[in-house]
Image (cartoon, rainbow, N blue to C red; front, top):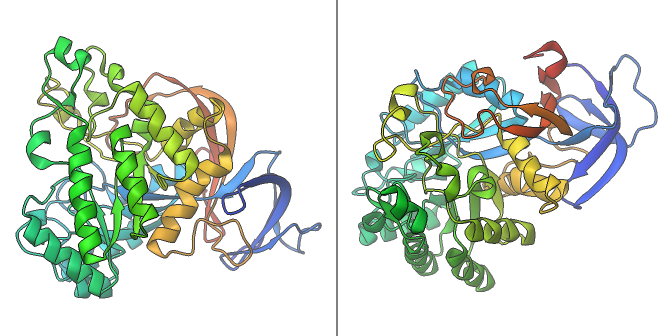
Length: 430
């Protein structure tokens, strides 16, 4: 394993929320020394050119198509896209075909991911069998098999009694439940958020209150069961007061938001552009700004890609019928730079939400720029401009809402365990 000396770097520390010039030595898969004046003998020396060096992104909530939809995304293609995007750990969702709901299935995808991906992959497992909301999975056995959390993703369980039992059992095993706060009845069939724009376009909408109602129910069950709980996406201003109240009352609750809900709004749908159809639907500009402020204050803990690959056939349909979701492993960091350049979030705040907090929530050692931490790092230029061409993305699916848009922020190198897995200078995997 190569010893690497990174110097002339702008260090982004999400724990202290500081930026400083410095050097870093990577050795035996760890950050060995921060601030060394001289490179060790025989080390690989990399001049960072004053660019930013930060902990690699820990992306909570990535969809990979294995098993069942490998034509949309494989562990190999997702891993290559992640490496090119500065994502060093993917937390993969269980909404596959079939769902990841048994130890045998979890062991299969774990082995496939280890063989195929250049970045780290950890797996969530389904909370109920088949994600159908009728019978809980074998949470204890799945924990033993390596599951880091449990989620039915966007299949929201309508049976509160089943959900209560699952929460109680998860609490007894100290398992983390990741939920999609949404009232399933109100949100069924919705394509956009209700409002004047939705009415003018004649599209079926859902009120932001559906998210608030789903969150209120979940938080009541969390209070009753005492389970560790994470809301995968909080996208509305109306959801913030109950979230703040739950945290203030000592419930073990965290919340996330996708990069699309932080940087886009409902007007971006424009002329029925289906690449902008995501779940939950894009919100108003007022909601977007409120959620950005919640990330800045720490009320919303985590920013994720919510990477959801869809093939061309499922997107080239009328807006109401098109599949929801967008790819974002490669666009997460440059899209986040929009918030930095707008003065809404600092780089340490962004990496607190994209790296440190998701790692802490899942009990992983990644996400820190500290001696002894895993040498999972991203070197990037926050100011590098480019126009995104979706066909250059390494994901198999190309459904990004940022296609053709001017962006800033380019990943230069990505390190996993001290080894370079992406180098922009060589045009790909190092």
